[in-house]
Length: 77
Length: 77
DNA sequence: ATGCTATGTAGTATTAATACAACATTAGAA
DNA sequence: TTCTAATGTTGTATTAATACTACATAGCAT
Image (cartoon, chains in turn yellow, orange, brown, blue):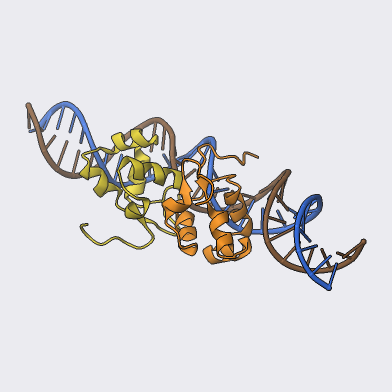
């Protein structure tokens, strides 16, 4: 139990991933985590470690600050 | 035991903190963690959660990518 | 030397992140 | 419709991050 972050971090992983035409499994392979971990992150059920955030940002060609934020993202970007 | 990161993240927390004339305790208070947590991070004994990294970056007026990196920093900014 | 402040070290406890397995669901292709 | 790929859900186990306590050390005042 307890799959809900105390202090949530919002992200655009799914948008960025789809923009590159990647599946969760593919992204997971690239960053070296389980494919369900990507799912948990996209659903914001928990927020990643910094290491993982850095790896994901690199794989998606984004700045960490473009992908993750403590305040919700607006639509479309 | 086991206070050594699998996949280390390098950081400039200490430099940035000292540049602002802050003590670890003061920075810890600002970001809401134990003062020793800052110590562990500065000594790179482990790498922070993304939430904490975002908070620290904000407190130190730096971009996450300026403060944290998967590759070592060169000397002097 | 004494005292104080900041920092290091060591140990334990708790919580969050991650892995993983099993099964459900949904959408699209054939 | 059936098949399949992608995703969602639930549950458990392990590991890393964080909290906290106590004590050591080092530098700098006085």
